[in-house]
Length: 171
Image (spheres, one colour):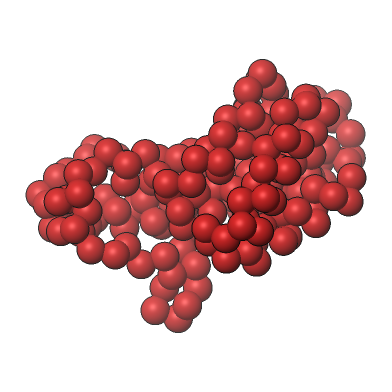
């Protein structure tokens, strides 16, 4: 059980597109397949939040998407919990007679915003090369250097699409 948090912590420090990141993602991919690991990785150790954030920073990283799919495949309760946590901020999400352990790890991940991360990555992937060039770089951090949340990045992308390309999405 100490391997998963160590991998997630290491992954946050890995340089993008490095062999260390690739190998860490490969191990996480293998660990994300067994049912007993899905909830541990996604919620207890904050993996869904970490992977979603990394996906916003590198929307083209296929391994990140594969791991997220592995985590959400075949576990309806986990999927509900991930969706319920999206939009909460360190708020405990508990249903029925769940154990105290589940209460604590549902609240430790904070605002997962996994749907926002996936929406951001998919919207970027749907743009043409010319549209991406017109948009220019999308700032991943505030002027103070604070990383934007996936929800903020999606909002910024919507604003840039409207102001620079005249594309308006209904939100």
